[in-house]
Image (cartoon, rainbow, N blue to C red):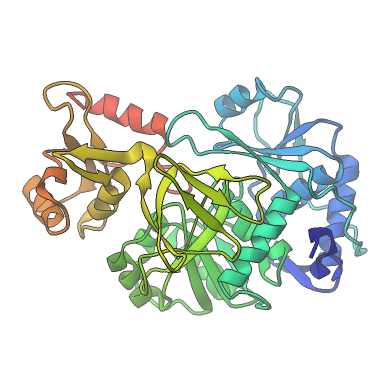
Length: 438
């Protein structure tokens, strides 16, 4: 079915979003989109920095109505915006909070016309969003997507996760400028009966209160970093219908803790800024990933390609995937993260998962040292009250001795972005502060 013929796009009486505590219909959404589109200045690009999820949504759709492309930077910091502006001149900054930007800025608010409207006519195949990678492996890279890509992908994901015809409040801790937050909390509701929830709670008690007060049972969309804080809380989690996690993988141990505390077995989705999500798994049932219907993983000697109905052409993946005979796949690690020591191979992501899975380690990451007398050896940076021998002993339970870090640095905190990822710039800054032969 063509996306432009999707029945929900014309179902104006259907609930679509919770905004400022009020349940809005799809007709009210389209009225706000049309009204905002008339007010947007005529620019080719719009930095959509709106923090409120509903205002972000109407800004994106209003821009698309005018043929404008939304730019989604990995951060709203002025230096990041200024750097991207070099490649996208005349871009307008749109935000819902008054900020002291030295750029052309427009303030976004819900027009509230009071009269429901129908969906505007869109060129669904035209580029509408340029999202930028998180910068965890270097300079953020632009990734262009159309509304059609998001619509097809949303349908595939909703069916794979058995969310069809379910009315759930989509409570997300992830910013909508990040691909995971964008597709799950904005586009999944747009192309299903799921309901957009405009707030982005951060602290555990705020998350619990949002879920408890949501108008429909809530589906929590979050990250392993957030989940590690939630499992330390006490109390009940009423109105929670499910948990979806992404941006990093969960271990079986972490998934068991989450199920015990939150009362819901977490499910994970897998994807990237370049591809959107294309697979899922129930972590407590299997370590393998199940591709969405129609997705094909093609593995060759030196690369892994993804073919999918939502992508106009095959995409080369940054991760190495190992397809199984039944169509599922295993993730061997990010190509840039693979390390080989003593003839044995593993990935830094696997080592990081084992490290942060240790009870008593609040945060941490592993790295391969490149300079000094320890060049070629693994090191770890941790936030923990445990001592070095205790950490090494716990790692030896799961890892070959050659992969247990010989050097361990202790820090008070590790600066991560809102999705829990560690950018290359933040990582290098931290390592520079530690000094030594890191």
